[in-house]
Image (tube, rainbow, N blue to C red):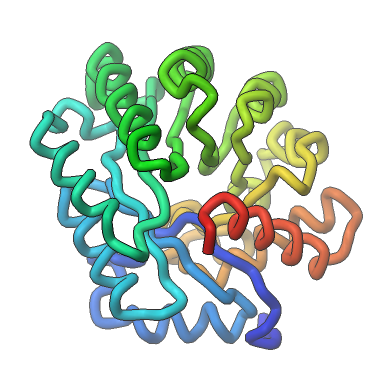
Length: 263
């Protein structure tokens, strides 16, 4: 997996501020660099507010790490006005580049659907007010998510649908709203041919690659903790599916991330 450090990939969604990487952060970032990953987006919102403050602290510490701030829809039931205000304060940090992750997850329903919709609306409005893009988590809720993005975003909110697992009809609706589509190591899984078919249809110019570390470790490392170095395996799979070079995938997906997040 070694490659020049200038290879230029960006892991657009990782949770390396989590306890899974305690004491190893420098080594994880170094391995990513050796694999040709230039930058890592540390995404807040997994669990509680500390995931956001820890992401910002990590971005402060490492030049090639940026942060986003939000709350996962699983935890929407715990998000009130005070939390939104605290997150708004964090968006003023120079290395906070997006609002999120935030969205809707009807697969597990850890928070009531109506609560998820209310909280997601608040995050869409926060993105509008701050002018930052939105990192969206959506699972089994595409119709409601697109409806809220359309009605509440009012054409002023752009962003990315992270860890996309839906069909092309859902992807097309997000693309029509101006959003990018991001793919993870799931596309390397043996049983993911339907998702690979979506990769075939989504234009490379509207695509991100990510790890969602520490989750969704790609083949051949399944069963291990995921980390940003493995985003190269996602990019290699995209290149194979689309019959283009890895260099082209790296160049275009990196440009997409830079264009959206202004980094």
